[in-house]
Length: 363
Image (cartoon, rainbow, N blue to C red; front, side):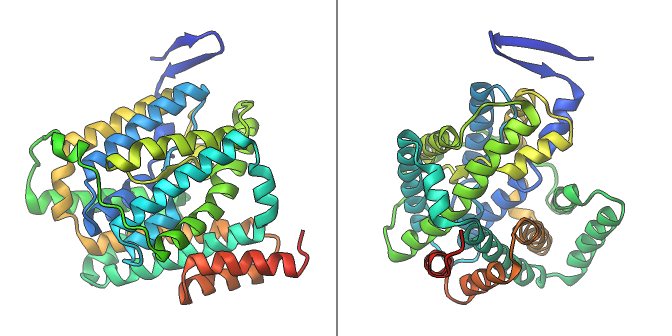
């Protein structure tokens, strides 16, 4: 059974099963990454999930189509790997909010993208994948039997043609293991203190480097590529500068109140479309779903097996790395920038990549 709700002259959302399945396409990396951040930092999982849920609903209804809301993966990789502290993450999120808002308001994003170059964006993306993969392997070694089970599930799904949901399926396996070891969690609302306590901020060189690394990915993937996909899939007329403005606004609102830095993303849009989403109904479903997870099952986090989490991070890394290499015109510079990011840091790789891009005259 399905029905539509017209909430303004030019927009509606469907309440239908295909919107429910479409919501899955944008959660495959969000839940695993956010749970990893909650387990390895002092950020609150319920608070982060509530912000993700709220932004799904707000921007889905605002744009009138199933836009994606995802964690900023470069920042996630750095904070999960321990290369950036929580305070530095907060500063990076706020800096990105200011920069993205300014770029959107001044309509200069496409100019910035031309200056950075696609090869640099893909190189940083590949570097993020390598950082995540390295971290995932380290965590997976904690319990090799559970890690082997998780890998087996992922391989079976991949062979069966369901690679896109392999990370989410392994995440569910870890949830079952946590449930069996800890029992049914007691539903609990996030405390007011957790919702309103301002996280500590720490302005350092590393926070600026993390900002640069994330900016490279955000410009190319979260704004420009997403704008193109919204037009291709939903006949949407949403510019990269509009997406930049909304990303800046939501981070300036959420990050000071415990939210993880968020962005739009072409991968999430493609995932929603592939699983059936055609209206912002998928965003409403997903927003409600995140809120329910925050209230009903957040108690499972303490019991979640880190070895399974490591396999999930490795799977996310492989998917991210495949995208970075698959959409690059030239593989060698992408790999070089990515490896440099692991050997030094992603901020240095970003700067060196931009300099090399212009020095070699690659347009």
